[in-house]
Image (tube, rainbow, N blue to C red; front, side, top):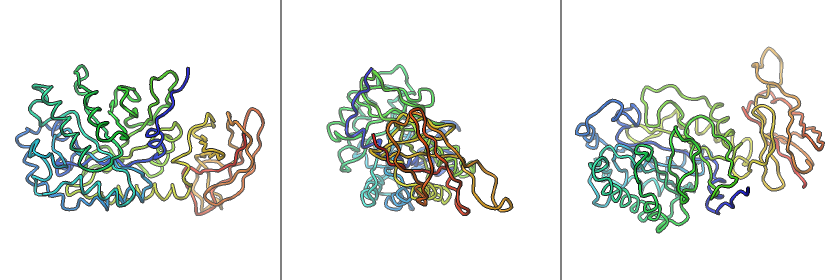
Length: 412
């Protein structure tokens, strides 16, 4: 069966490759994650008092965009409203449970969008569909859905061009009629090129849905290859991932993933053509913490060391042994090699993987030359009709990239 032809906006989204997710709201003041109200059973009448202490004194959209840019992220998806029901934007009279009616006294989404635009980062808006605050979410559901659409219309009409909308919460009422067509029509009216995502959650990773959606979602773990044959539409894929154990700020959550783990996860996403959306949880005042900023910067340093193929190059049917894989962009092919050792005296090198021959199958075309991107070292290889084998040299002492990239010219 044929694979559908992707729309341009979906191709553009796939070529962004790497984005930064931001979970931030009233819950950040408690430092116990974004679900603290629900999991700790805080009564709504007590929880809403957090609005009275929400100052956002260190929230700086430009600085946030600079951190994303330094990390190599091409877009940022920010929680404009999470399940708590509090909005970071001016709800224009829909309610007063928003940032302008808090001590922050300003539209924080305006600040965010302006910062992204200044740094060349594409702003995306997360918006909850589940709402623990709105009285009609568990009452007159149609009234709530109109409120939801009115909220989304504000986001689509007040901030200029945006990259897309990222919804989350339909899994909370699996049998309900969410009137998705009407919601997505609001977006298409104002933002016809916006990417629309509706998170399927941990229980339905990679599941396709409404035809107005543009990407399937994978939450945590590693994404699976997409089989698009016979699909009614070409969907992109995106995996969202936490740096530690929570999406929102965890003041006592020290369980951070290592930089090598994050680099390998980014590679595992691109191996199957999925985007990687890596989350940070700013603190109570809206500042990205030192650890999170440092991990983002480390990923950016790695991208700058191995080249830009992580964005535009795509899966091409080439299969490597173990975690190794290849991507292709036009007449260039890129081989991603894991677990190489560092060369040097045994007394000073740390034990690692192994250099040597790395084999691949499915290479269509003739490889003309091959070199490491990071230092331009030419590499030996051999190729026949069934396989391609490269001699992957070890890292020169003083270097260890986690995943090393070799670039080849290929002739069909």
